[in-house]
Length: 107
Length: 80
View 1 (tube, rainbow over the protein chains, first blue to last red):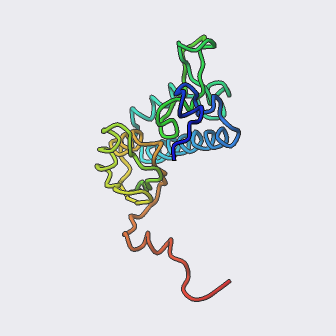
View 2: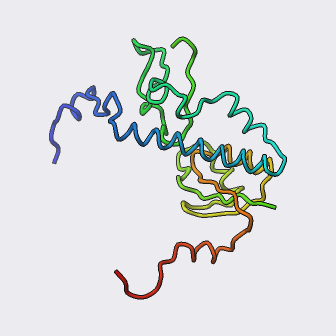
View 3: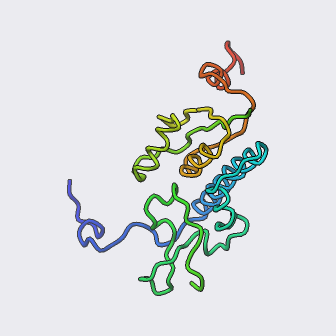
């Protein structure tokens, strides 16, 4: 049965919370660490065989590790349309399966 | 000669076509599937494309599908 609630009726009420909960943040850190672990394993295996990969080197050159990141960069990302120039990372499509670690300097 | 033991933990549903194609090239068709590839820069590059979706270990020997399955199989019989 149709029940007119504010969310269904107005179409302007957003049900997605504007911030992450603490378990969501904990899982986000866990995912960041798991990506770090994958890259470390790949890099160590290549080094043992005396090889190297451009993709791995580039990752180490450009990306911070989970423990080096600021909380701000772990849980939010740059958005020019926001008043504070930051929005929560769960607004990013497929945010649990993409790497989003660096933001424009100064923001 | 060592190998990468690659397990698909997260599916690539809804991700760009390239990610799906890389998984297909690695031979990962469904979640929790495990494949072995020799350690080489080209395989490393493929892993880097899908690093958010997989778990990687380095191992000395390539295991067969049966051997991988037996690692997960519980001991037979009743027990508490």
